[in-house]
Image (tube, rainbow over all chains, first blue to last red):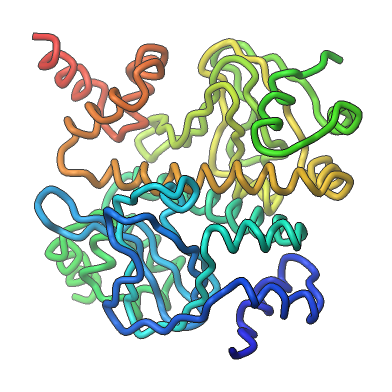
Length: 193
Length: 193
């Protein structure tokens, strides 16, 4: 397999892992390629893996009662994504994980991750910092969703993540922000005019 | 100081820490008592501590543009709470942390937590599991908020957390679920009649 340098570089930002140990860590993971719109995990099944995005973008979504896909979370390069309720309990999930773009991913199964963490306990710190960061992001995401106006939510999001707004299809961005695609078009129209 | 047995019991659920090590860990933390509605942290300041609830309940909230307090997260017994964006970066926070009831808390400052984790790396696993669980909960909270109807959000919440719904003042529950207090009264009225 290849050297998964994106993962090594990402780990290096948080903890020290030497090259020999990293080679051992790689024996626990699987590189996966996904086409645009390919599902890596489907609702009703156990979410077996934790996914690291090397290139591309994943999203976690569910299908609501109207049959509409509602995006809960995106993962761009250097983010991990899983349905952590299902992954942690190894019970059936209510969500899907899909590639938004053609993506290169590193997948690690639940049991493999546990074994890897036993062998390399310093990786507990890496994942602690990753989840702490995600927990922090979700607190401020909720703050954003509860903010005064929908228009302000969108404008703040554009300011914080301009590259992301350019890159993601608008109907997915609308779903992520809790808007209808029509409402998002309306706000964007107002800004341009 | 007392023996903080609630924290020991909680850690024991996730990792093995012997009594001698736990006594050392206690040298890094501070027990804090908070009156009902007492602020433990205020917006504009650095959120210096991570709080563990032994007894009582805390909430993380912000004040929106209309001057209304909007609750982002609650922490009952055995939950940790902080503004993790401010705590991780040690920069000014946009949120408040307040005791909902008279509460007994264990606080650990950022630098003390880092030193404690260096001395007891097995605690990295404990906090990794805590943040992974919180990350999981926030994914399903977002799923809940995006669900079809507000009434259904409330009913599902009651089913999942009946003791919590009984215990928390209704205006705080309304804020947490993104409702007005009037709308919550309306739903509750419909259920009783």
